[in-house]
Image (cartoon, rainbow, N blue to C red; front, side, top):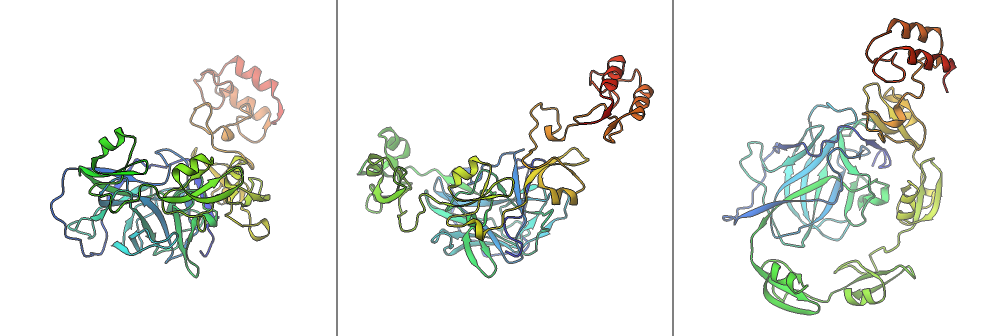
Amino acid sequence: MGRGMNLTTRITAALRVGDRITQPALASAVAMLLGPLAAAEEVVVKNDSLQDGGTGAIQAGFDAGESAAAWLTAPCGGNIVAVQVLWLSLLGGEPPSIEDSITIFASGSFPYPGAALEVLESPLMTDGYLNEFRYLDEQQQIPLSVPIAQGETFLVSFKFANDPNPYFGPSVVTDVDGCQYGKNGLYANGVGWTNSCDWGVSGDWVIRAVIDCQSIDTGACCIGTLCVDDFTEEDCNEFDGVWQGADTTCEEVECDPLGACCIEATEGCLDLNAGDCAIVGGLWKGSGTDCDTYICFPKGACCLPDATCVDEMSPEDCDALSGLFMGHETTCDGVECPEPEGACCLDNGYCIVFTETFCDIVAGDWAGPGTDCTDADENGTADACENDCPEDIDDNGVVNTADLLLLLAAWGESGGPADVNDDGIVNTSDLLQLLSAWGACP
């Protein structure tokens, strides 16, 4: 990570997650030969919470050869038929970029991937879109198809061939709702695979998969600690059971597995089954987890919006202070908190949550630390970017004779800057309001 993952660009404009573009890969790969498929339903599998028009963060701190990866869990059995990567720049309109590859891996042991299941070479990335890839070749003749079982965890990894511009991108994107441990990883040159949350990444990667869910009827059903074969998912649900997936049998499933049980009252951890964990008032973290590897109560350095730092904070407490959690067991002595962020108002009407330094680079007006791009009155302009002195018609910081002459020149017109009270016409009420504000603007 040549520039560090703390270098992020938060944006509130041009997040067009709903706009999807299907791209080819530019080099062919060997396709897996499959028989005819049953009727199926496509399901998008993701960890991120980003919605169309929402706020995300462009993560531009990568070097060529480094990767971002999302650990995903299949909600059904079927085939992975597409992968999706959100690719954005700060101002938009960047030319298409040919990157190294997108690889689907078996889950392995987090944060280390397992075996590579399929590789899409040289993906062509288009700025401003959720890029979707369904084929392994440029001619779009070899479809992507990776068999996956219900409940199986896999990861989709995006590898860079180029260094993103650290100020503008384009690059991969995360949401800003906090980084989920065990679901986000990155490969850093000279370091290897790591948990991306430990780098201070703001949220979950917008890297997704599309699964063609197959219509398979029966499997094992766990009703408490009892296992019953040949149940449909619907029948299993009627008995308040947990369906184990299509074609599973009781010989291969465990209905009462152990897992890490996080007990908040003592900030401790015990390896228990789900029922016993509930009895002791704990939070069960799932089958296959254990207290030796699962971090129940992470504590570390928290960078506050004013760039000060507080030690020994949980991610939840840090988030409540609008801070940035720097990772488990980090300390303020060992981290460098980013510059304070605030609303950056651009001439084109966009508002960007940015540092003062980067706001100056894009020739914006910085509204100060802790400000944001909220548009509470829904008038199309962020509240922090609205003019608090409308009587200053020429926008020079002083209400004086020049503003008076501009108002008189526009007398009777409909709207415009001289309509200082915004009632739709330049008239006597605007004149009186201007004269009452005579002098320096606040």
